[in-house]
Image (cartoon, rainbow, N blue to C red; front, side):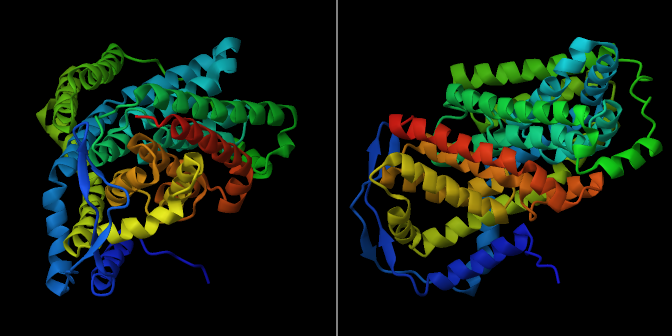
Length: 462
């Protein structure tokens, strides 16, 4: 009998019920706070007990709607950005870019040498900039035949879009769905710490490229070494491997759409760094981009609205996750036990070495990622706890956000991730085969995360 974990919504509702119950058992408590450089920080050692406020059935049932109210800005932001990127995908400009590179791959030795680095970098950029995650799933259907045509295997065809986008998501520098939301909750300037996050992204992407290049060279020499060798031979007989060669190239509209998207990212970086833009301004920018893309691609008002609403509709589930995660914080706060929880967690994370404290925070976030896979939902659930906890154990809040991000490095190998399961089902790839192949790279990711967290922990990165 297979063990099946409940989905994210059931987990969060169960957590709400447990928190409501805990308010009847756990004593109330409070830390004193102080304003430091414009930020409200907890004063270490100031914890004291206060009268508890048990939360009953009425509080439990009204907490989710209160979560929607308090998280309204973040929810609106997610829906607008999701709609904007659906319009971008509707133009098929990104698909055309990939097929253009694939066609060039068949004609040029230089492009063949650069294919894996270029494609992995593109997907990683997608994860790091606009939160590409589920959007990578359809690309698996393009990259498996491409990989087979290039004398690679199904594992490589899956890894390029899937692992590429996931590693970009986990080490993001401009992703509004995890970095932006987490920093907003932690009281940090939007996309601050950009330079170090860029370095983390470059290292993680480079590791991924190196691993895939090593594997590609290996199976080109000895194809039978691939765990998918037998099934890939059968697939080659089924697939039309000349489809990429028949692609006629990118149109002028595709190029203009991609130029608008690149311009949008540049304006966003300038706005955040120079003008202090926050959620409202970034959402407005993506809305403008969507309209311009719709006009350039001649989607028409009906086509534009259909794509935009579908993109927003696809993220309604994420909106519910954010609201439910916010509801947990509301119950903890109104029951006056959130500071009690912080006081209890502090010894578990605290260490004489701030590096070890950062590592323990990362391991806790990795464990949470096994159960909750929405980057935005995780940020809404954990950062209200982790940000002040960082204050207590001597870590900067920037380091706490980075530890939260790195917790998602395990997503490609956890069986509770809908994206992982969906990708492998689409690729007809057994989960055990995939995990055994990817474990060496996951070990490298773990080592990388420990090293990259040690540096800001030692320097008290702000």
